[in-house]
Image (cartoon, rainbow, N blue to C red; front, side, top):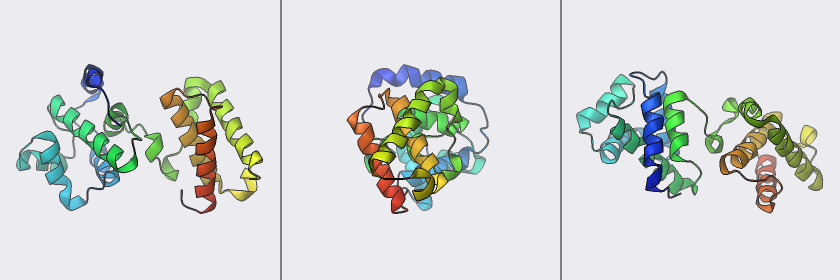
Length: 197
């Protein structure tokens, strides 16, 4: 997912607003994103050096002190490179701002959300009517595919499907009635039936 450079001021604003001296849980979230990007623990320091231009000792401080880089431009390089790496591996599923917000504030990234992190209430707070319409669309697609969500799916899997589809529609400002959304819902149902979600 290539993102335009005109977003750079917006990203800098997010970082300026959010970057505290210490961010509780930062190291775990960084490790999660590095793993999503296919970077093994032994390669963390090398990735940090390559992506940010820091020295090895500077990169090691990020890991040892469990905090974001002090210089905002270094953090911005780290976050955008991480997003690019994840998108190269997973076909463009995360935005720069999602990575920044996840690293600094632990805001979930819908496309990377695991069962334990699923909570659609954040979408309900933004637009409850729209979120409810998307849930009804998911149920409609299930019915048309002879899937009884209450019987055929684990409740956690259904919640994950709802979270991912609602997140996709909100993030991309997509109408849930578009054929692509129906196709995505059907694909997620198939993955759920095979226990692959």
